[in-house]
Image (cartoon, rainbow, N blue to C red):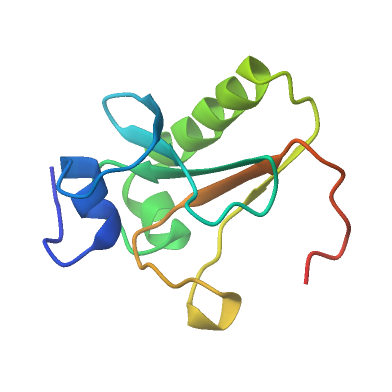
Amino acid sequence: MSQDANCLFCRIVTGDIPADIVARTQTVLAFNDIDPQAPTHVLLVPIRHCANAAELAAQSPEVLAELFSVASDIAASRGITGYRTVFNTGAEAGQSVFHVHLHLIGGRSLAWPPG
């Protein structure tokens, strides 16, 4: 398992920083966002450190697919039938933590475009 000791999300994965964990598999960790933008705002990260979605797709497409599978399971468990999943890739897109993370956002009506 590849970790970055300076990465916020790697430190959450290892338990060095507490988080409100929603789900965990062998390759994915899901936790509630500390600044939720909707009633459900969960971040899903691979256990293994990858900087962004493109890197994860190239290195571990099966883990990329599992992020979406776990997101779907979480939404279903909360009775959410309509939700948004978002990757921000790069600072210009709003990525502030450079450990790939999928946002699962739902539980209210969402406008388009998002911003």
